[in-house]
Length: 409
Image (tube, rainbow, N blue to C red; front, side, top):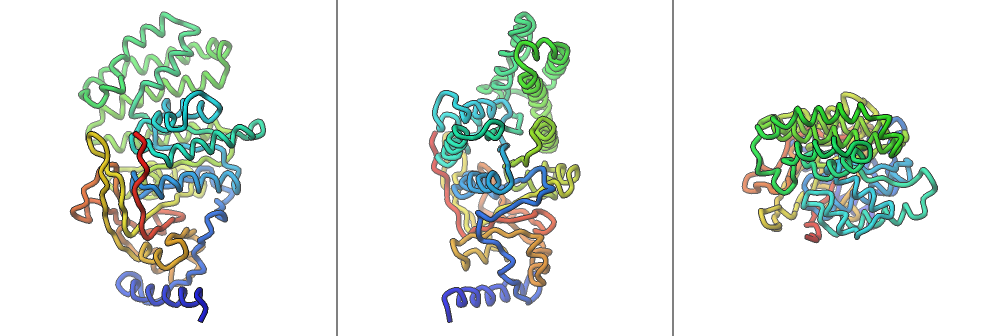
C-alpha cells in the first residue's frame, strides 16, 4: 500500500470513530477538503472575505493573515486589508506601506493593540510595502482598520486637515476632545464619554459644513477620510460609554465601517480580519456580531473563514507583557488535522457539503476554541464556543497544533 493510501485509510478509520458520537458512522470523503492554500478562490459575487482567528497571540493565525491575503490578491484581485484595529491608527500604517517613514516593526506597533506587536505582523507590512513599490497605478494595496476604541490618530489626521481651512475651529475641538487621550482612555468613567458625545457630534456637522473648503484645499479623498475620522471619534465615545452593551455597540460600528469601505473603495474584494467571534456568520456569544450583521446585509456577498486547532499555545496578555498559555480542545474537525500533510487543512464548506459524510459532520453542534487576548483556561466552557460549522462559516482552516507569536515590544 502506498504512503498516501495508508494515510487515507487511517483518516477514514479515525473519522468513523469520531463521528460515532457526533454525526453518524459514515466517514466523509477527504477529497472534499482542499489542502492547497494557493488554490483558494473566493466566489465572484463576494464583496467581503473575512478571516477569523480562534485565538489572538498565535503565530500561525497571524501568518495566515499574510498567506490568505496574498492568495486573494493573486486569485481574486483583492487590494484592501482591513484589520480589527483602530481606523486612525491604521491610516498611519497605510502611509508606511506606501513608502512612509519608519520601520515595519514601528508600523505594526502603531495598529494599537499589543497583540499585533509581532514579527509576523511586521513581515506582512514589509511584504505589502515591497508589493506597492512595483504595483501599477491604481493596483496598490491598502491597510485599513475597522475598530474605534482609541482616538489619538483619528484626531491627528482630522485636525491636520481641518486646521488648513479653519485653525480657530480646530483649536476649539482640540480642547473639547482633549479627554480622548490614548494614554488615559482606559481609566475614564463611562459618563465622561457620554458627556463628550455632543461635542463629537457637532464636530461631524462642522466638518460637513466645510466639505467644499476641505476638498478644495486637500482633495476630495482627504475630506472623506477626515470626515470618517470625525465619525470614528464619535463612535469611540459611543462604544466606551456603553457598559454592558460594549460588544454590541462596537460590532455595530465595525459593520458600519466595513460598509463605508465598500462605498468608498474601488469595487474590488475587501479582506477583513479579526477574532472568530467577530467574523462568524452567526452569533457565537450573547451579542449581534460583525459577521452576522454583514451576512444579513450582504447575503452571499459575505464569505467567512474560521480557524481552529486541537492544541493552542498562545501569548496571553498580562498587565506588563505576555505569558505563554496552552489550551486543548479536541473536536471532530481539528482531530483530522494531524493526519493530513502539514498538519493543517483548508475546507470550503459548501464543497464539502456535497459529500454525505461531511453533511452530517458539519451540521453537528460542537465546540471550537475561542481564546482572547487573556483567557481563562481552567475550564473548557471559558475558552470554547459551541457552533454548527456549516451555519457559522463558509470555510475553515484547521490546525492540529499552533504556537505563540514572536513578540516585538
